Structures are given as structure tokens and as C-alpha cells.
Image (cartoon, rainbow, N blue to C red; front, side, top):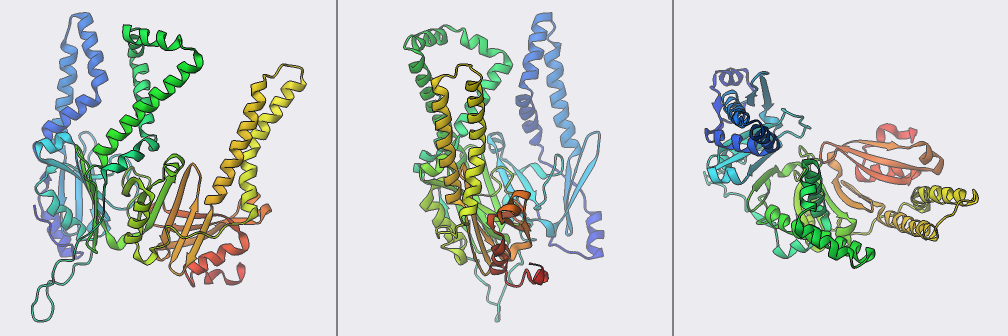
Amino acid sequence: MSLPPPENSAAAEEREEAMPWSRLDRRMLLVHPVTEVVRLLPVLVVSLVVGSTSGNHLWSAIVLAVVVAAAIARWVTTSYRLGPVHVQLRTGVLQKKVLSIPRGRIRSVDVQAKPLHRLLGLAVLTVGTGQHAGKGETFELNALDARVVPALREELLATAVAPLPDSVDGGAVLPAPPVRELARVDPAWVRYAPFTLTGLAVVGAAAGLLGQSGAAGAVASSAVVDDTYRRVVSLGVSAAVAIAVVAVLVVSSAIAAVRYLLVYGNLRVTDDGERLRVEHGVISTRHTSYDRARLRGASIRRPLLLRLAGGARLDAVMTGVSASEHESSLILPPAPRSAVTSTAATLLPEAADAATLPLVAHGPIARRRRLTRALLPVAAIAAATVGWAVSGRPVPGWTWIAVGFLAVAAIALALDRYAALGHRAHPGLLVTEHGSLDRRRVVLDARGVVAWTVRQTFFQRRAGVATLVAATAAGTGAYRVLDVPVDRAWAIAETAAPGATDVWGGDR
């Protein structure tokens, strides 16, 4: 498969209109029926039960026939065209859709291969444009022959990166840019998996599925579960609760560790000066390529549990890559903080120490606001408890202990949030950090900021603080410096982007 070089002339558009449409690989006809059968498994089970009850097994055959027919119709009605001006995708059985993307708008190319795809030698190629894509608006080619995908990915990304000249004076061919390995996963990093809550989410989802399917009753009434339950309860309520908690933590930790190894195994991050590549996965693989010139910073995430374990996660702040999409901006999964900060320093050599430097604190007003917001709910609970006691109704002693514990926890959380709050600004660079349960430090290239906003709520105006918002086309789209003294807000923006705030001059 060959992709013509990008052009913008009217003649190129005419040639593009004359180009034929291509279909996806025929092996897609094996992928989609299996995928749909798995997705519609509850419907198939119901149809099987209905057929067994009525003695008519036609229901199951009908469901399977519909699934296969839908897969065939999807293959017949899906086609694509990679022209010199646009890449186009045509889909739809009842409602026809044509998705057309100018080649100059391509920001990233993501290649995935699930187990069935790998077995059949196929891959899924997704083109990213930096815009949020709704349902049916994603340029996804599922599935292509895996052998042609690497070359196609490089050619698609070549539209976003200015190609180097093929030769210099004298006809000497320039060597290919060297490839640097920025990071490689260490199997020992799996120790951070239990601190990501992934396992608990899987356990909770499995419990919900059992409850909705009606199988929970059968499992609970089984001899093994019933005997185990009786033995645990006989130890006492406290011991039973402790055993249940430990069991859930052990199971969820094991699930999280297995998922970590399968999803992030073989992870490798490389950079050749033009492209940043991230690849990972054992059973299902994922290869993501980014235009290096569109890198606008990095985000170091340290959720509370992961932070207590000494870990962190690194994401890229990249134009055209939404940080809200799962794994779309991943550079390093949960890993030692030292590995994350060193990778961030290599990724952003002009801001090598920004990931570890102490930040400028925001002062006593910001601390007071965090304490106030944390203690208000506790004060409301305490007032309700006092009102209950004053009315003459009995209040258990443990209630006061619980209120005191909540007050201490709220103060600790507020002080931790304040300890994380800070910023640092240098010409061309803005660093901001905030959060406790999900702490994030963002190192942002101020050259990518398209607008600066100073925002104040009613209570911020009364307190004399403001929030500085740096709007950018990268990552989440906006990064905030929270509760900074209002007289310093514009000065921070001016320091990070000299001259950017001159238009407001005397209004500040």
C-alpha cells in the first residue's frame, strides 16, 4: 500500500476524486462476528434459554445469523481512500457517512492488535486529529494487513513532519536520525499495580455482573461458599470483616498485577528527534507514534496510594492528543518516581529540573480556603449530631469518635492539598501542581499557550485570590494555577510568556 505525497492544488483534488476506494482486509469477516458474539453473549444466552424452554432452538440460530449478516454488511459498506489531499473513510449500512480528514490535520497514528487480530495477522489503525471524536467520527481502519501498517503509519505521519532533504551538497545522502530509547519497562514495576485501584474496579465490575445476571444467588448457595461463610462468621464479626477485606485486597492486587504485566509488558519509549513512539502489550499490542514537534510538555500524576508507594505516572502534553482518552497520552505507566522524573527530564531537556524543583507557595489565604472547604462538611455533621443530642435523643459514643476522626482526616487532607499547591514560571515555561487524591504536576511549554485567563469566583474575589488559566490545544486544553494572589496572576503569565499580556496593559 502506497500513500501519495500530500498536495493542496486543485489538480491534486481532481486526481483524488478519480482514485478508487479500497476495502478492508477480508479477514475482517472473521474478526467482527467473533467480537459481536462476545459482546452479545447475554442475548445469546437468553435466546438459548428461551429455545430450550420452548423446544425451539431457532432463536439461537436467528441471533447468530443476524450477527454474521451484520459483519458481512459492515465489510461491504466500509471503504477508505488515502489521497494526496485527504484521507477518507466511508461507512454505514442504513445511513451512509463519509469522514474526510485533510492530511495536514493528522496529529497521531495509533496501531493496536488484539489477540484475534494478531492470530489473523491484522491490525487496527486509528488516525488522530486532536479534536474530540464522537461516536462514528473516529477514523479507524479495522482491520488492515499487519505487514503494510508500519509503512502506512510512517507515511501518514510524514504529512505532519516536514521531511528532511534527501541529500546535501555533493549528493551525499543524509543519515537517518538516531533513535534514542527514553525508557523501557522493568518487570519489578509491577509492585505499583495494586496501588492503582484497577483490581478493585475489576472485582466490583465482576460482582455487579454476577448480581445482574442472577448468578450471585447460585454462587452464594453453593456448598463451598456456604461452608466458607459459616466458618468465617464463626470467628466473630470483626474477624469476618477483616478476612473479607484482606481477601478482596489480595484478589484485586493479583488481578491488577496480571493486568499490568499484560498491558504494559514490553513497553518501550523511543525518540528519533522527529517521532516519539510508545509501544507496549503482550497479548494485545499497541504502537503509538506522535509528531515530536507537537510536544507541549509533560504531566506527572501521583494519586494518593501510588504516591505513598513512591510511584508516579508520566503522560505527554501533546497537541492533537486528548489527555481525557484512555491511554492516549501515556508515556510511562505506574513506575518509580525516580524513573518518571528522569524520563520527563530526557523528554524535555529544556526543562530538565522542572519535575523536581520546589514550587512557589500560594500563601496563607490559599491554605485557609482549603481548610475551610475541608472542615465545612465535618462542621455540618457535628452540628447535626449536637442538635440530635440536644433534642434528648441518645447519641452513641462512637459517633463523637467518628466526628473527631473525620475532623482530623479533613485537616490532614486540606494541609496535603495545600502542600501540593504551587507554581513556577520562567520564560517559555509554566509549571503548576495541585491535588491530593490525584496530584498532578504539569510542565507546560508556554509557547503552546494560545490564551491566558484570570478567573475569580465570588468567594475568590472576597479572599483576594484568582485562578490563572493557560489555554492550549494540547492535552486537556487548559491548565490552571489555583488560588494565586490576584496581584501576582498576570505577572506569572507575563513571566512565562513575555509580552503575551501587553494587550491588557493598564487594565490589570
